[in-house]
Length: 137
Image 1 (spheres, rainbow, N blue to C red):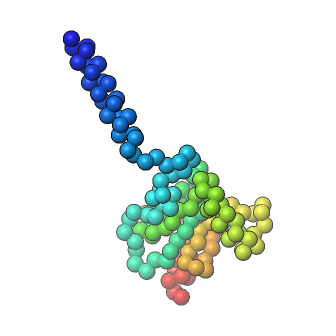
Image 2 (image 1 turned 180 degrees about the horizontal axis):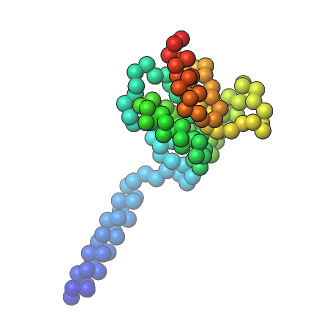
Image 3 (image 1 turned 60 degrees about the horizontal axis):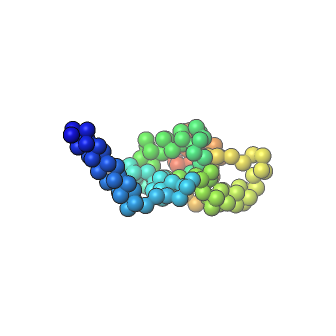
């Protein structure tokens, strides 16, 4: 008798789980939910911060370091993962075309600060310098 009750509870829980899965929208295969894809930092922004956009790969340690730096310093940013979104990859290639960067020298992260500063790679010192330069305009 106890086994039957336990079995009924198990199937009831399984049914509820399956039913809940029907009502939760899933992201298409290979995509992340929009809030993770854009990666706007959830920390409060520092004063007078420019718009920062970072083109990244999900597996890139330098990209992760850059995102951690901006998050830790309360600098809001938009993360555009080029390996999960072909539109972001196309944008990155157009930016590199306008910068006249040869194909063999293109990489991530590419950090855009405001509308004029572009940093290839990640260096805390270069980012700090660029942020100061932007704020002094």
